[in-house]
Length: 439
Ligand code: BGC
Image (tube, rainbow, N blue to C red; front, side, top):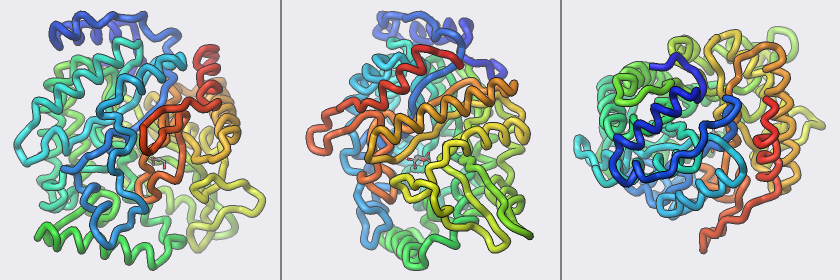
């Protein structure tokens, strides 16, 4: 196993071997040159948010039941399950050298213990298509959604969930491992813990509505234990997910394949304000055991969107005068440098900025955010921090969870009826940085 190295020539060759091992169609795929310069430039996206019609997942039920916390159902999403080649063509045309994507557990194991070879074939084709375009595939094994059957039996709130996740990791790796460039078990493994710090500004009505949604799903499926990662009990979920990460990472590392395996964390800059502020306490709450878990991983994926200001009472509202993103939190790109420094000091493993981005109707705001991100990463590198990649969230305007389709992070607009992709000017801002490759 590689100890967290970037896409060295050795890894590229291992990937090429994987293409050949994957079968005759793959062997015919043209191999492009290895990613230049080592630094990874890319975009990130998840399966549920882009593929569409993920009807065997827990989220599909929660989006379509009443009451629901979701503004829109995911529906067809960006139809990327069918249109992945077009998406990859766009990413390659922008001069990027990696592509972070998810594989969907609910498609691969739609019924407990029943694995879909056809779904795995699909992801083999997607990963081959990445390789064929010189895009190192960075695979997320879980990005929030789980199979409905798994949520019905208690999701990550029951201890044996860790073994079921590890079994999925093993089965997926058996087919996909030879093609994978890098992998993470969980996306933002600590996401549930963030809810413990945010309640001061989540309205009681929204929280009650989310509880009613989960209760309705439990009734509809006759599953009193129904649990979904984004809405369940943070402490119980976290404990089981830590075990699931350890077991899942071991299963992935058992191969086949030879690539770094890490975990990505939601890392916002946490600023203490005023006497008796509780910023350090908030940090302990938000990261739980995940800093330690990340210390044992090949790399950590830092995912930063803004900062959190914490006073003696808890989370504060945005500061007057600081511009807001379309999500309603501060447009505050220097948080990116802050979290990279925090991760370097607290974790000490190679860092990839696996997500950062901005929901902005005005694309010029996004372009400036990208410039600011590159400047932050450049400063961190100049300080000697081992940052090895920057992946913008997201390639496409996609399903923004409970906020639905109105919040647009994409470098590329997607027509909701025809799925036509239109590249925005900010995509060329990222492309110019990737081509200059100054990091
Ligand atoms: C998640 C994405 C999400 C993005 C923007 C991250 O927390 O990984 O799924 O769309 O933030 O909100």
